[in-house]
Image (cartoon, rainbow, N blue to C red; front, side, top):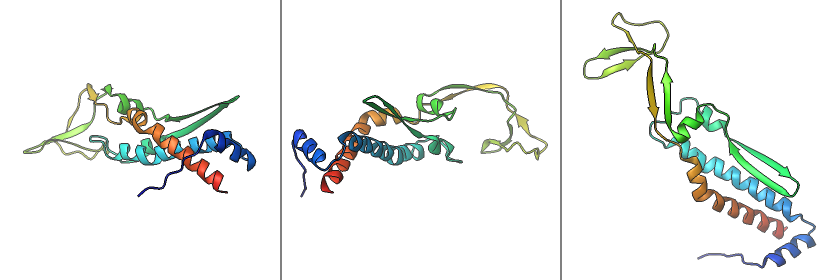
Length: 166
């Protein structure tokens, strides 16, 4: 069973004008709503279900922002983060670790790394400087290309329905 809403664009515009509603404002509201939906649903799934991506603080997940710009009649919305390690998780790459991390070797477990708090057993070793290759983990841009536009279109449709129902 489904309930469909079908209408001609010109009829929708006429009805919005008749109700003294600005279609651009309704569309912008829909775009903003869609980006928020994408951010909250898809992004949280990406941030919590990726192997190798630990979430001890949640800083990366909370750092994403929706940036809105009006330039004349043009409107753009961008999902962005300023967290310096987001790019390495999105694209992958190699980082240079300076070394100095304390660890001990335990039989049948191998290397066990310790906090840098100064309380180390006598057999403590320290890592040397080395490169660490981090695989691509987030796939956020691919996810947006796959489902982001559909989410935004549905949100615009939802906002239009609400505006027309008033």
